[in-house]
Length: 309
Image 1 (cartoon, rainbow, N blue to C red):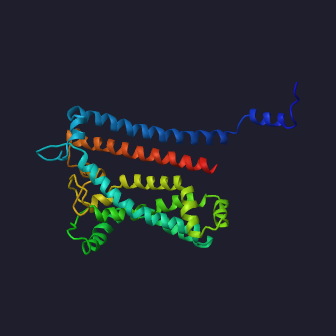
Image 2: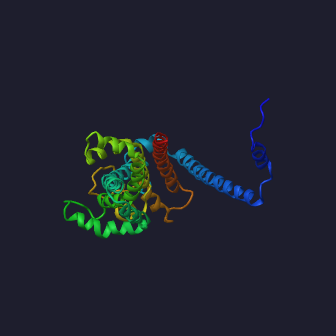
Image 3: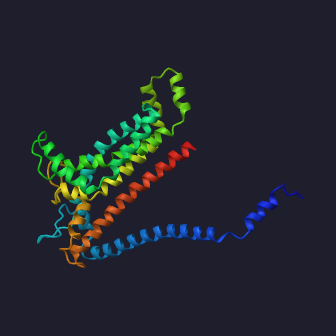
């Protein structure tokens, strides 16, 4: 029979001892907070499903996915989601074309080239952009960015996809830069030293060693920024126009999924009508898009954290 090691009895006594009331209360509060978030998410999904099923009882899924026009508020009603989808994708692509290069370059500078002192104050300043209200970004796009772009882009309308897309890119730069910098900073120093010892330059080490090693984390930051751009509301509602059209021309007015939800939610459409239920069908499509993106981002983050471990 094995003899208990010294200290085993005291550990068992601590584990079996009654816990203080404060510890039980803290455990209950933390557990309630966790379950509350799950219940809220389940409630949102339930509302979307119930209202969307009521919508699809009157509008077949074939029309929702097969029609190329979206005019549920007009006399000639069409319920094709693709004009709203194309507007959302167009502004999101423009935002990524702005955010990914600038965000990644900022991350590389902060992680590899900046001094520790510069990194300590530059990163918080960069992250301040994430705290600017989106309504401010919207009017910034409408009153400053779009007029400037009209001087260099021929045929650019007053409401368009280009200006809001550029401003959305500026808005998500902190997300891409901050998370990418964390991924780059987590790359072991031994990999950098090994590349430099083999004769690689500083730039070659960054491009061929550091960035590929941190690729999963960088990709996760881009996808999180993508999810943020897909769900953006005020910028596109203010500066992109409210004209749903199936186009990929950034110079013309477009309408995104979130902008349409805002338009119908203003109160002019009676609750319970088919037109009102369109916002839940659009919201369900938007929820599925962001769910897929966030799932991919979560998988990539797990992969990079697992690799780092």
